[in-house]
Image 1 (cartoon, helix red, strand yellow):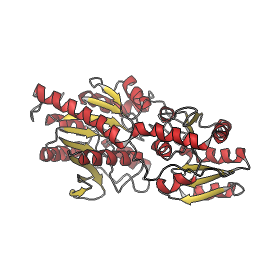
Image 2 (cartoon, one colour; image 1 turned 90 degrees about the vertical axis):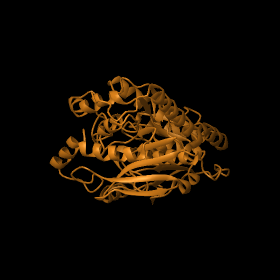
Image 3 (cartoon, one colour; image 1 turned 180 degrees about the vertical axis):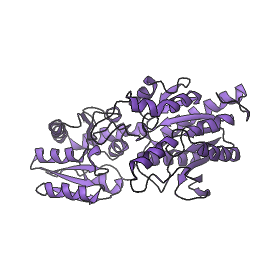
Image 4 (cartoon, one colour; image 1 turned 60 degrees about the vertical axis):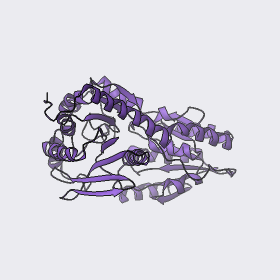
Length: 405
């Protein structure tokens, strides 16, 4: 089967978990013997093609006024960028040309920022079946997070409705809709997206770690962990408050980076706590050295890959009860979901986990994580792709003259 996947960024470029999830899926499909092409963007003026771990990787130039992952631009430029990104005809032409060359059975779109929903019309004009996976809130609001830095935004607000009008309209031509959590799927469907598409939830996959979970977790001091960007939206300040409330017998290891001024402020204000600031640390080096992971995200994360990664290493999680995070915590078994702004609730949950048998909890976590295995999630996607491709073949809909509504 020939599968084309589209995502804003791809390895080695990464801003979140979506890039990891798309890469794992692409490489797993290629390992299974399928022809996989990935269409992505880069900060260059020409198209490039390369082979990477069995995947044919096409990097296209961005057809907008600036590269959005560079330093922040002024508000007028940002507004202009987002207006063009509502429906970008230049990106549509680029992707159509490439799809004509690849001739895939299915186009699987993921994060669309920089491409816009115009790529769906590029595929439809060629009679190519489209599956879309929502990994963020891009279709609802241009900031992709529905978070304004202090508060979660109302998806039914006027600004959301205005920016999403065209995107919602074009979503009627997507033939299969996938969400990475029930929270994300319900939100999009309730707002009227993908009215013609059967919907399903396929959680993100994780690569199982090479090493087993900690077998020697017998130290008197409980090591808490925080892994992620050091910024308010991820709840770093709540994690620090939890450490302060717990007192002796606990320490906190913080892995991640952020704005230097903000990090310096946090370090100065919390110098009396038993903290270790690790900087960037790969998960394989981080998880074996902690007992409990804190994920106090203030925004409604679509899923929270770090929760799954922790479970695969046998590490329980105390996480936010917003977004998709509660769906991937087996309450009381692999952790607890708590209100993200309630440091006392987080501290109480940590205490409950600390009183449980650590080896038993680790086993419950690794068993729970098996349902998110790379192989199982890949097979789920493959069934979806094959069903849609077969339906297209039977209905003989592939025609380069299919009119646009």
